[in-house]
Length: 157
Image (cartoon, rainbow, N blue to C red; front, side, top):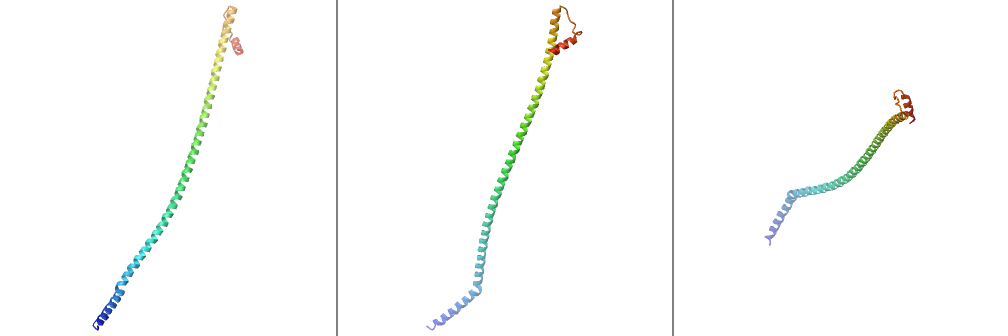
């Protein structure tokens, strides 16, 4: 068994050298790679958290902008409705004024035509009176000579 003790001691020495070599040259790069990977994962999680917060902020901002846009649209519609109402009222006022002007012109025209008709009737009545008087007197009356009498008669009619 003595031959196996030096073999065990040799194996122990080789194992100790292997452990020392692994701890000195192999283990540090592995731990460094693991630390870098942990840092990348932590950075990724932090970035994901920041992204989630940014998404939440953007969503909130989009909602606010949408509310503002809706309010602005309502204001624009309200203003447009007010302007339409004003235009309608102005058109009504213009139409009423035009109708009043047309009525006034028509009334003046009717008054003028009535005056002309009255004047024509006065002349006809005067002529009929002269003809009637001429027949009564059995003589013809000179209308030029008796223009004053005819004018007085027409004024009375």
